[in-house]
Length: 405
Image 1 (cartoon, rainbow, N blue to C red):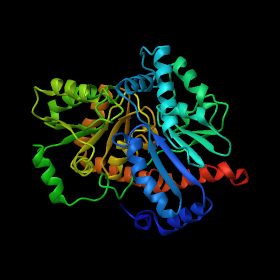
Image 2 (image 1 turned 120 degrees about the horizontal axis):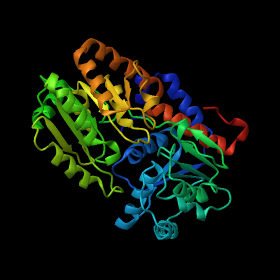
Image 3 (image 1 turned 180 degrees about the vertical axis):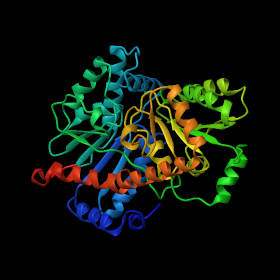
Image 4 (image 1 turned 90 degrees about the horizontal axis):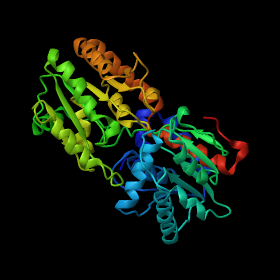
């Protein structure tokens, strides 16, 4: 685990000093994070890094995880898809089951935090146990720009009991009766997934997976999830391969609270089976350094999502100065400034067009990649994320000190 002071070399000492000053205002306050999994997915990854760093600043930040069975996580996956606008069958009995699992967790958990920081829909009903003196914050990491209305109404019946809600992008906000804050997520530049790597290690990872570094490499790193559109990525690659003889890497894993992941992985392997230049790689959770190497060896990185919460794999690739072509969905347009830090696309054909352009103009691709790294440094590193959260927590107790985001 890195020390908070180590980040001064990346963002400057003044920004670290600011974090210490903000942390002092939270003396004697306990921040209790609650989500649905400790392994896999962006939320768990962020909390794994952020909670220890907050502790180093002097903030008493902690993290608990609710328990759920296969049925519960099957229901919450359907809710996740419905919030992204997908037509799914969710019954009243399903929603009541979610509530009952939340109540069972509430009976078994201790709510010791001064700030109860609840992440995403899975534990949303814990707020039924709200008691006086505590501040309850619902942190939504999902794109709510086009949700199914019945599911959104179900969530609103709980959201109204929170003190405020936090979203990752302006477009994700909803018509709510409580205050809303916009705080984008972040990447950790010193983590195994993002730190600098020796060329020899990157070469060894390429050799291990049979990837030819002498030919162009197109990569998408994502959970194996239909909304990440891995089949669409293969379609775009096949349109480009006719001219450039490139390779495709589809690398990722699955979160413990996503029961569909392995099934999607098998589907992708089946579609890719006839092409030895498509490398479908299923990574266990402890594979961050290999993911880092795969992104660093890439010529272009894709994020061809159909729907997206924020898509931190985009920021990860941009931090490594790799040119990115990504769908204009979710929080991706905050990360990719079209024709400056990457390219936004709306179709398989558009994706193929920008891939051809970048593969054909390597110097232009290099410039785009460097622009992307600057954009991430200014906006999407974990130190900014911690600052925004500290300011939010302070505002819950000091209304006169609300910091504008």
